Length: 355
Ligand code: HEC
Ligand code: HEC
Image: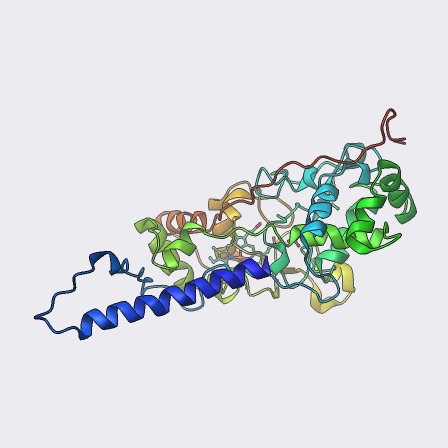
């Protein structure tokens, strides 16, 4: 992946050098000598729009990768199996994909997800799409990175409810994962930690480039007039003090005086952390209703109004709200195309489930 993006860069660099060379030589050519190689004329380079508010930009294609968990194709493939693996749950029913459905924007569109024995938790499931870019995982940031996060759900009693790491490892071993882990990590590699590493590596491929906004920002596509007004409006009213940059989040934790969930305080116990939540990215937000950490708001329109009121003490007009929603819709990127994996299973008998 790194290699291919480097090749792309090299090609781009070659193309732009060639393009500059061509246009220079045609400019330098005396008017009396018309250029006779029409096929050598490069297509006009796309012109990026001049009206992008400060900081807004194209989604980066390179995600941060921790030094102790380099990306490899085999690891990503193993991580994909584990992501879709119901054997991680005690009931044999729930996989990561149950709550973070890659067919529906990496979420389940439920206020609170359904987990083990039909239980529901108290927080809305955020999307896994682009999660590799977040400063920390969970609404309250309690997991520093994807590797730490992936160890949570299998053991969480209301999510996948496996009793312990050993039980998860035993289940994976019974299913036949041993050789797959060894191929990726070396001998005797089937472990809870390596499971989390592989899942994290797969999640780092779940990036959504080429949203209409990204194409527009590069001069390669258009967005509607309403979306353009919305783009200016979010900068004008101050949304972009938090939802800034190419990710449309500054990745910080900010006060959101809404609801009863204490956010970061529920982890740190510190008063100053009360109601702090990670600024949610606007990338793919049109796909991830219902909104907020408690999933209490059903529509994007209402979420925009609530944000304006609570964060900026601003009442937005109907027209401004509609424009902002149109702009947010331009941030839905190309969804990852994932081929459903074949999972290892013992031959001739079922896995031994407990409920
Ligand atoms: C039963 C539903 C459920 C299952 C199963 C589940 N998750 Fe989640 N996931 C959630 C909820 C709810 C949250 C938010 C919890 C919080 O912030 O306290 C979450 C948060 C996350 C986040 C953080 C995203 C962010 O923006 O901070 C990631 C990444 C994630 N889950 C990946 C996974 C992976 C990988 C698996 C499988 C190993 C998994 N989840 C299984 C419900 C689920
Ligand atoms: C002071 C920082 C700040 C400002 C200013 C701000 N937001 Fe937010 N925004 C947040 C935080 C923090 C969250 C996560 C809230 C939560 O826990 O539910 C969020 C969440 C959202 C969500 C819901 C995302 C989701 O997945 O549930 C939307 C939509 C949103 N903001 C839009 C806006 C708009 C539009 C504006 C301007 C009118 C704005 N925000 C201004 C900090 C801010």
